[in-house]
Amino acid sequence: MFVTLIGKDQFSKDKRIEKFLSETLGDRISDPMAKQVLYATDTNIASISDVIIEACDSVSMFSPEQVIVVRKAEAMKADDCKAIAKWLPHAASGKVLFDFETLLASSELYKALSKVCKVEKYDVPKQYEMADWISAVVPTHFNKAIEPAASQYLAEALGNDTKLVCEEVEKILLYAPDCKKITLDLVKTMVVSQRDIPTYEIEGFFGMQDAKAYVQKLNELLNSGVDAIRISNTLYSYALSLLNYSSLTAKGVSPEEAAKKIGKNYYMFVKKGQAAECCRRWRKPLLIRVLRRLADLNYEMKSGKCPTRMSQELALAALVVR
Image 1 (tube, rainbow, N blue to C red):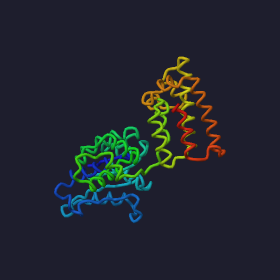
Image 2: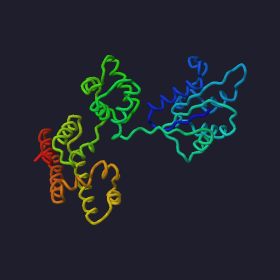
Image 3: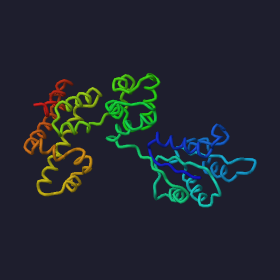
Image 4: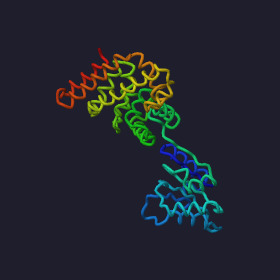
């Protein structure tokens, strides 16, 4: 039995490895001699391939078959990959799970593995899907309800590292095991942002001229240490994309083709980002004016004419709040 996992969703892969060990070991799951967990990054192991092949081929009535789990398998040496790829088609038996973050489909090892087992993909959720992922996993895995706002906070604070998110949820439940629901206030008490908040998160509020949400996100970005010049650059690039998209669609270019021409993802920019509605709300003359103001504001901040945090925040807020 061979299993291959590929992807960066470490939480889901850990669950799959637990299931693999349970299925293959049965009553022997607590026996430390029944399995080997190898890390390809371990420099004390001279040859991963030798360990795997020896463990699988040396089964006898006196030595039961060992289950092998290879973690960080993408770090295996080229010689080990070649040796395993050559051995797999002729392997008499074996219970081995390979855990890769990445593995090229064109590689000899991938081709050999795909012939003896199903390759299972574990891609991390996109950042914009992470809040929904948390809302789905917490009730099923931790048997706790969670507020949508708490899921959103965790997604924004921790990004799409699934294992890190679940470790933080475990920490919250250790602190408050009797809570009936994981609330936003509870999450804010226990979890501190561990990622650089990307400035593109302000684009949607800017595009829809949602003054309240725009000012809140602007304040959040600046409080997180994001430079005001970086925010102005993001808004300038976004406003220019809206202007170009508006001009192209006005000439009869399809939304899909227009997004492609300006180098934007159709789903993110047009469908989820509601580019057409943003263009309608801003209108072409106003977009041109705001582009000029952003260029001037960028110069003012770089030349020291807008030196304080307060003056920068007010100037950026005035783009939408009128």
